[in-house]
Length: 220
Image (cartoon, rainbow, N blue to C red; front, side, top):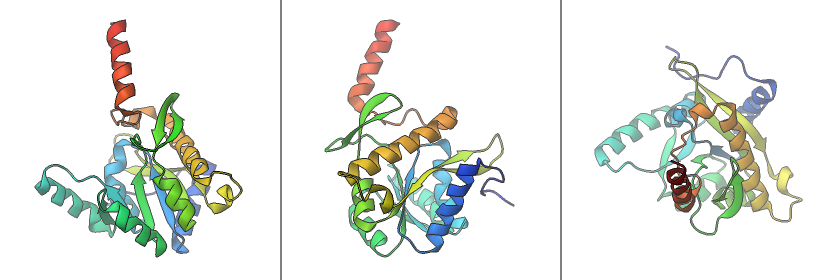
């Protein structure tokens, strides 16, 4: 039974990017997947692996070790390697250096030395990790999300941007360029269907969250 597949119909630009995304992987190029926090992200490793993309997927372990073992076992059945956030520092450079694919949820507020950005109209800070590693290893950066289709248990991958070192080689600050570009692409994915974005995700950091909560209480 078909559970996870590429959509039969996509907008032209998205379809071209999706094909390029798969083609780059088949040519053995280093690939960095920056992912939007959509409701379907839990099935991402299955989607990638069963479509021929054996990625190293970075994830945060669950507090319950038994459940985490179960979840990791299911996710890795497609051939993807599950890398904990604690292992990322040592594992990701090795994977990219060998021409592998890395998939990372790029939707967390950077608490230290982040790059100042605007996301969905609000100021926040993004981690430098994607930009630093992409620049150093010359990786192709694909900005994607996995979205549920209607009420059926079927999903489609949305590739909103795909770029390589040619895009940033003339920039004075390549890391900032890469970071702001992938954040803009993440915004595009969210705006296509805001109902599938995990709004509870701490994208803007605790300080702004407290500020917005205070304003809401004042309004009430």
